[in-house]
Length: 237
Image 1 (cartoon, rainbow, N blue to C red):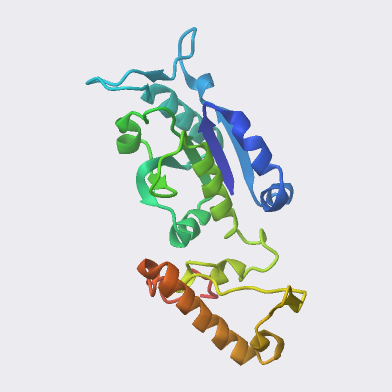
Image 2 (cartoon, rainbow, N blue to C red):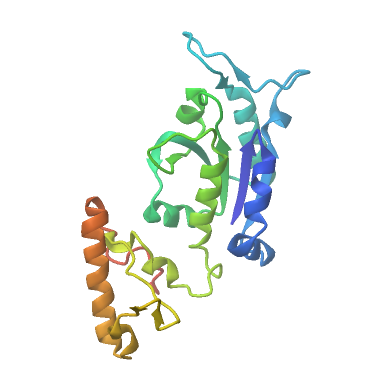
């Protein structure tokens, strides 16, 4: 998968992309991420990318011209790509959406700033408008990194265990069950005996019950949410 990012602050991306799973995916050629300074697509001596909003109000709004020019330039160079605007007004990112995006060959992420982005970008350029949660950040760079990470986990070969993404929280409308490792007893707190039993059927039953109980207590709003018959897993058909 190829991911191009349009941003006013390219330096934000260097750390997260150069470590751990994302770095390994890039080194293996499974994921290509290129970050572009949006100012290079702005016109004029001063490369202006934002202006005061029509109708008044505080702050500045990002202009449409550099964003359209950037997306169109990337599509000309690298072929058709789905444009994603990171925005608090967008569709909430969840595993189903991340899986869907992982099927794309090319994504172009647009990072907003200031008071937002000219609405014509969302209306006439973006294929997706995506939010990572019901809160507001100072820009779209952190949401873009979250999106890249969430999508990359579904790319074949990125994780050592290909089934891992389908056992995580929010799959099948459940939070993940508790996890334990050595030592067997820590400061007087033992690991549940069922996990030491070697009885895989009982372990799976315990994990399912714990996941349901945890979800009921902490996130009843997602309990039993339908993920489809195969929960997004690849099939042989």
